[in-house]
Image 1: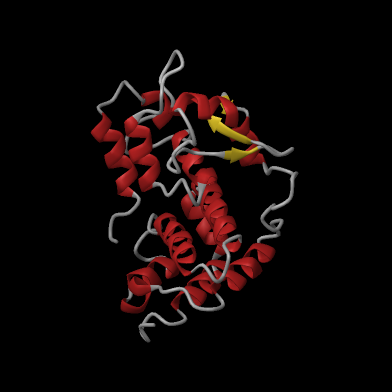
Image 2: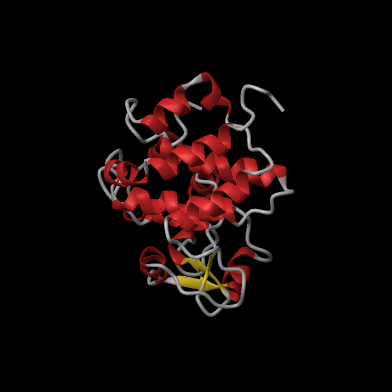
Length: 227
């Protein structure tokens, strides 16, 4: 492990806890909900799966890069140590402790769970069942599709991802979802599509097919600027 980056992930998570109130105020409720969803995904990652931990940590960093340069957490990200931010053996445990600090439930793994208000909002959107999604895709749905688990179990695929009249997945949706890391943070990706976007001047899901595809891709890529 690069010694400069060793322990940086744990330090970053500690800073999030220390400055959690100003992070929420600065990001706003919608983006803060995305951050919490991505922290939930990190806390639920298998610690031994280094690649998955790295990707989940990257998803957290992408949201935090929206903080202004003067914020303590953003200063950490912009420092030589923060730019590396390698996960350590205690990264997942630190994320789980941070979630407890936020008074969040542990990531649901069983057949049922109680969705939080943001998840309830997203679950109210039109969606396809797993069987319907498989039919549209002609087999197993691609990993880039947003897949949300309902409170009683069973996967739900937001319907906007598919073409009308029984169509297959939109290519631009798959491309955007790949940038949003939808395979490891489906709730965060769904929140991006169904929330207002200043860069686009509207809600991405309502602009699908109305704006050129490259505009949607560019807006999603904006989250990763500075990487």
